[in-house]
Figure 1 (cartoon, rainbow, N blue to C red):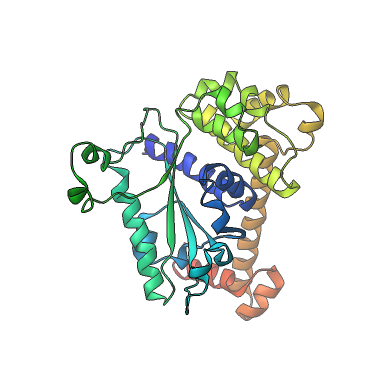
Figure 2: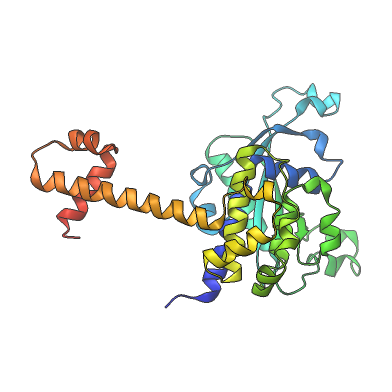
Length: 326
């Protein structure tokens, strides 16, 4: 039987991961939330998303969001650092952790495990240790006032003791406690304001049925065309799932709240569902054609792959299913 909480979390994870897969949107977030005194040292033009395989097994097992890297701009370091021999090729790693509910345990422990997993992978691969900057994205139902464990000590204890206590730093993006009015004024986030409003109201299905215009008013063509289409496809899919409406009635609500010229630029949720259905039909047809050739011809796997228009791995997978009687 499906677990409703797991399904909810999956919805949120897919949406956040989708946003973090688009460099143009990641740069909007970094430029807003990275402290100004740190920005000059970051080469934002070198931004890239690290694949899971790039991180060590321990981190892959524990971490479900994204890690981006940027090079350190060594030319911005003070001259006496630049002149040091064998200056390591340091990099920044922005480690995104998404929370749709307030964690029971202190978040510092979790982000430190991730931080040291990345540094351990650096050592293993003979790289300079990374400058890991965790970024927490929170939009849970419960208010979460950022308070680190270290703060519970520092008011009452001298420096001699405090220096032995861990004080990990991280950036906290609290979407839950940000008002709709504040989000609207975040013009530097551009279309991401729509995502913030959606995430802020993620636990209220009625919002997506009756106040969808509060999200769609931030629709504009400011990102590149590819990012524009990808982002709003993800946004509408997410909003439809959160509304618990079927695609067709949800699509009617979307069309009611979009300017006519915008409606023609965005693939509706219904069109997306149709496309997915076509893709599934094409895939099924290829599987059946492959099965037929495997059972009724003496063609090689390579020739079948050529005839069906798939790779050899696809044919081998279908053959394995046939061998197993599936």
